[in-house]
Length: 283
Image (spheres, rainbow, N blue to C red):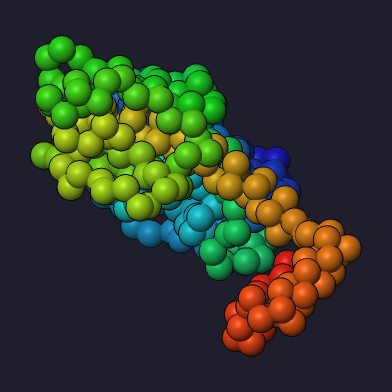
């Protein structure tokens, strides 16, 4: 299409396979939009398009992202205010006909409304950092660092010391908006055997927000970037693990040795059968 539809706080540029959203940086624009700057949304990441009446003589064009396609939306987990939704374009009511045209054009190009197997929308680029109530969080693209503040950090965190987490150690991120009392960012470990404190202020893998700390426009892009890096590393590791196989000659030798132990009476029938099945499963 190559056309541009400008609304309040953003403009959508329609391409054949994507929508480029440019957010305004004006003082009235939500700070999250200002932080995002612009985002390219592949049509493969969109599940549907709606056009509904808005408030005070406006209409709202909204793209519905596919579950799992956008790390920002996945990290937000439904906690964003409607006015901070980066997939909403608010327009004057007199542009409803034009908006309906673009909505129809987009719908005609959508192919898959189901969950995405991987992130299709780019995450905010590191390095990123923000100040929480109890520490400073920074992310360089591979490692998250928490540096505790003298004022704010709990005794448990001071005893644990400043923390560093490589993305390969993590399974995900939990972001709870600073708009609520217990807002925080928690890193979820890949190793689930260790006990995790229920309260974020006692967990060295968390930073607590609090009034004026960890604002949405800083902490949410941070969480999305970490989540995207975690998923990327996990996806890259799967093929290598899935094709890992033992040498058939080595397996045959071990089975032969196991048979000798069995004949000598050093291994029971049950142990022989069980261990042989395990070795064959490694082929």
